[in-house]
Amino acid sequence: MITATFVLVFSAALFFFYIQVTCEKILRRQFDREYFQSVVTANRLEFPSLRKSLEEFGVPVDYPRLRMMLKCDFLALTYLLKNSANVKQRYSNEERLLILYCRWQFLSLAARHLLKFGEEPATLRLASVLQYFANVVGQRVNTMQFGNWTAADFLFYL
Amino acid sequence: MGSNLVQYILQDSGIFIEASLVVYLAWTGRWKGQGAVAFYLSSLVVAQLTRACFLHEYGLKSLRYYYAYWSTDLLLVMSAFGVVCLFFRRACLREEKMWRLIRLFLVFLSVLVAAILGVSLSLNRHDFFTYFLVVFNQKLYFGCLVLNTLLYLMLHRMNSADDQLELLVCGVGIQFAGPAASLALVQLSNGGRFAEFLAYQTIPLCTFGMLLVWAYVIVYVPKTAGGLARRDVPLPAVAAEESKL
Image (cartoon, rainbow over all chains, first blue to last red; front, top):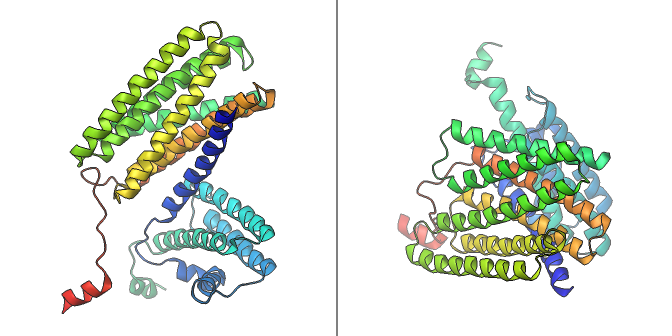
């Protein structure tokens, strides 16, 4: 009985640990440049400023506003992931996994808010997933729109 | 009917992904250096095909499917143990001294598992399928999970640059942790209906998760040349500045 309980608790904990590590490994993928900046500016996304205020100044944001900002960014970016410069108009498996991870983090954020414990790490994790999504969208748009054209070529044919 | 449908879908999509990965590995000639992956995928294909045949022939609630399921599960747990051993070998490709120690430990562990299997088999010959196999598989899954976690910690401590191996190990972790937890729940609830239903759904789902992670690794993550290399430790800022001067 005790052994089975120990196995259950330990295995369940490790299950979530491995899922978390896998998602974080995927998020650590390096992009050749910071594509997310243009997507953030064009769509007025708020997660970078939120992250900056948390990381640099430690300024707390009230929870309903924080949740609303992240949720709106998440909805905008998942829409862009599916529809912007995506010929198949489908998420890839990797994106599906990260969307699930994002939803899990939203739940975790709500639970942490109720328990008044460690909201900041969950918020930062959500921001890093959103940044990854913005990078993917930016990279896709960049590859699709311009192909081998340089900016000068593009302007010349306008 | 609903659970049957879910089981069929999981089973068939699992076989599809496994077969696709095997074909992809063969087609692109990536068998080299991915022996462990190929080995486990092949045993998964064999086990899943056997299960699928029994499932389609006799149905989810038949005794024959039950026997086939747990017998193939034993085969899978044994192969999983082999995969973890092969991953240890890959992690210690440049650390021969460490590999000698780990090899000794793994051989000792294999002998121990075989001895436990032999003794338990002689004691539980009558309820082989109803009790012994489920408990034995759960323990072996848990053993593999612990071994896999040790490997993950070792990679982390060695500061491994082999991103592929780290993600493969994470995939295996998902594959072991889910079944170990759900089988422990079955044991705790004394074979309760809900726990058994959960185990039946969790095990293929975890395999599915592992396959997705492995597919991502094989297709997208480049292999580090020469197996394990340590990540270069960045120079401290002051030292870097001095070297410029």
